Length: 467
Image 1 (cartoon, helix red, strand yellow):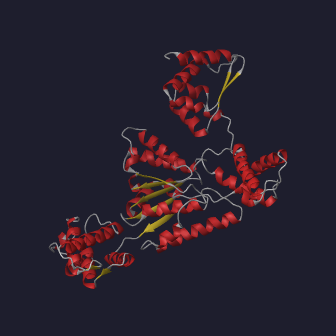
Image 2: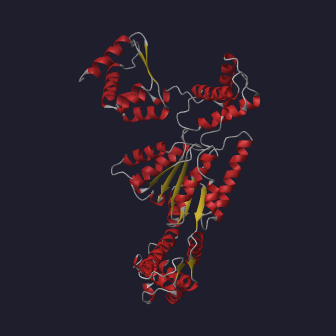
Image 3: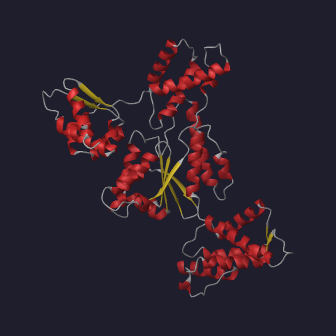
């Protein structure tokens, strides 16, 4: 009821006189109106003056506590100074091993050294995730292992490696991400990078070491596969037990607020949502366009150095090559923290036609040679126009071909519905080029053309103009 929080908080403070008041998960007070009222009363009554007959300890996770002190009642920071805080780091492998040994001894259970080593490796992987339980994590894993051991042999008290189970992230559902990448067109060099990354992670794990994830820059024009590869990379890292295997995706524009400080809060929320996973920021080349976007960029850089994210959360900045390079040159700090780079090449008209032939083959269709030649010429024109989207446009052409064939079949029951003809290609490309009405070759004096002749003339004119 109204005033109830005041009364309860004052009563607690009165009862704690001459004692130590411990407030666990104190950051929770900052999450509601009534919690903020309680904080205000604590600030007004607990001054931290010499001789004061009460000591208040606020306990909680570092990030949440610092946010509460930073954004809450200004008096909090004076009374609970962050630089004087006691910091309790996560247990290291050696300390977790000691805890495990003590629990095994207490319960009269036996775990051979190689099994205990595997146990600690699983805990090391879990430690990379947010909210690691430390001694509690030992209890949880030991409890599961004990259940598995009893299911295997009710009388035994000796653990085997199989009793530990597999990392839930490593055993994630779905196929091999690299096999999925192999099925994608024009990704050979990207696949080489991911195969090397996978080999490095497996080697480190075989040596008993933990792989710390790095941050990447993806550069390429629209439709070259940046988002898809980011998802596959996350999936691969999930199956390897390095990350959770999910992506949090947003654009740099979505990160921008409307007032000073808002961009920072939006970026922080997204980074925290991606903890232990992959944060994919598209159109990242716009991160330095104004004061609001720079706030988001600064928060991203801050996150790369924070304990809960450094080596534990992967941030991928994606955008166009030249603007991205210009942005990184403006900020040496960001450039040094995002030093892994993947380049996604544009698709030529020939690439698109090759993709269409492969797509036809996969769906038991045929693209006749005259149709393919017509599409090639039309795409030579389309590539010079604003909005060219590489793989997305190639997929759109395939969709237009299917629509053209469907229309032809609707007026002639005897049509071979497994073959795309020249007439289908002409119809499809006429509709496709309506999506790209602005010819980038107007300055050459050529009229809007499509087809092999138009494409050749446009290409020749552009080449000569560039020379």
